[in-house]
Every structure is written in structure tokens, then in C-alpha cells.
Length: 381
Image (cartoon, rainbow, N blue to C red; front, side, top):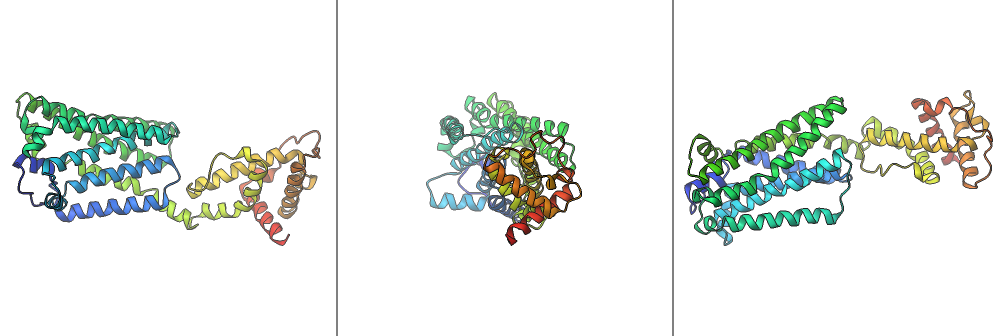
């Protein structure tokens, strides 16, 4: 167990300092550092990925501030006492509520948030923390736990601290239930189920903290208040470890995508030359940036956008491009002719329109051969 900082009350030491053995705490924090670093390097394109990384960073800061070695450094080199450090820990824990909320809104409802919205949320959090600092001032002045006041300050402090995170967790759980109902892929089901467990455990931690504090506020000490004092991070740390494991799941595919090591990334590379020309000629078919998508998502997006662009070009596609017996090279040349005619806004060669798209356009393997032929054609040209 971690050594206790000397000046504070016994209860404050129990509440503010981690009970996790040093070896395990180092392993957990090192794991979180690695996860945050790799996510910051490889998962930055989507808002939901960035918000999860921010949540992990806030939680890691909370875990660090509970470590006795860091507490000793702060006590020795700053005017802070342990009660102040505990308020900082709660600040870090509450900081994770905002990215959790933004994560859900961007994941399930595909919302994009402006910096002003995010700053407003953090300003609201700062106001909440200012109230918490005022409420806990007598306890911090005496370097005791706010629970030892056993008055209205104890209850109000923990209501303010313990309420935002369960609300954020409730949003996450609701989003995961939606994912389970609508998305039957095995990976997403496992991730959603694990996230529900994490949020349920962490939410129970916060709710039990609030209930215990309200009991202390009215002078009712019982098994719950004793358990909260003796096992302050018993529920927080396992949930944190599981969240870290969930967060690392998309990192490996992202690394493989960045290095073009997975099959879908290699297919996307083969599609890219023709895709770039088609989306430049018909830009309104683009659904968004593909730069930070996983390999399979990028391949799927490129195929859709190429197909939509070619459907737009069909009236200008010469007859060889519609012939089911022609080679991929001929079809690639026909696409080049169609692009030229489309760019010059000349009359379509198929005045009556095309009754149905050519079969090669909807055949994934054959379409890929056309993309390869396009690359070869443009290299030789």
C-alpha cells in the first residue's frame, strides 16, 4: 500500500490516497500513458476519438493525484495541503464528464461541436468547482476530509461532485444500448457491453459516495460510510482499467491503416488514384474526409464515392465502357473519355440515358481491376 502523507487527518489520508499496491498502480498508469499516447498519434481525425482520449487523460490525472509519491512532491514543493490535492483530484475526475458527454453526442447523434460550445461546458464546470472550493474551505483550511465536517457542507460537496459523472455515464449507457439494438457486429457488441459494465460500476461508485456523504451530513454513520472510507477507489480503479482496454481496441487497426498493413488499406491504395480524379470531377459525391478512417471504413467510403461519381458519368460513358465483354483497360479508357466530356459539358453520348449500370461497376473484384487499369493507363500516359 502507498505510504501516507503525514500532516493530514487519518480519514483524509484514507479518502485522498490510493489503496492500490505501488506495482499495480504503476502498471495501470503506464498502460494509460501508452494508450493515450498511441491514440493521440493515430486516432485524431474523428471528434469521438479525440473526446475519448481527453476523458482518459482526465482520469489518468485523477489517478496520478491519488498516488502518495506525487502527493509528497506537491506537499513538499507547493503550499498545497492534502485536502487541496483531493479537490484537484475531484476536479480531474469531473473534467472527464465533458468529453464523455461530447463523445456520446458525436458517436450516436453525429453532432459536431464548435470550440465555443466546448469552452462553455468547461466554463460551467469551472463555476461548479468554484462552488465546491467554497463549500470545502473549512475542511481544506484544517486539512481534514470534508466528510469530517458532518454538516450541510459534507452533503452539498458530494452532491456537486457526485452528480455530473453519473449523468454522463447514463448518456453513455443509453448510447451503448442503442448500439446493441442496431449494430450486430461482434466487436461493437463486445465494446458496448464492456462500456455498459464500466459506466455502471463507475456510476455506482459516485452514487454510493453521494449517499454516504448525505448520511454523514445528518450524523448517520453505518456500514456504507465505513466502506466508503476504507475502499475509496475500489470501484474507480477496476472501471478505469477496463475503460483503458476498451480504448486500446481501435488503436491496432488504426496503426495498421496508417502503415497500410491491413487488406482494406491496400485496397484503398489501389482505388486512390481513380478515386481522387472522380471525386475532383464530381465533388458533391464526397461524404467527408477519409484521411483518418480505419482501413475497412476508408475502402467502403471510396467504393461508394467512386460508384456515385461513375453513375453520374454514365450518360457520357462511351459504348466500350458499357460492354460486358471488354477488358478493364478499355473500361478505364472509357472512364477517362467520359470525364473529359463531362468536364467540357458536352452533350451526353447516351442521349436516352443508360437503363442500368454496367455489371463491372457493382462487382467489387472487377471494379478493383478497372481501378488498377486506370492507374496503369495514367502511368503510361
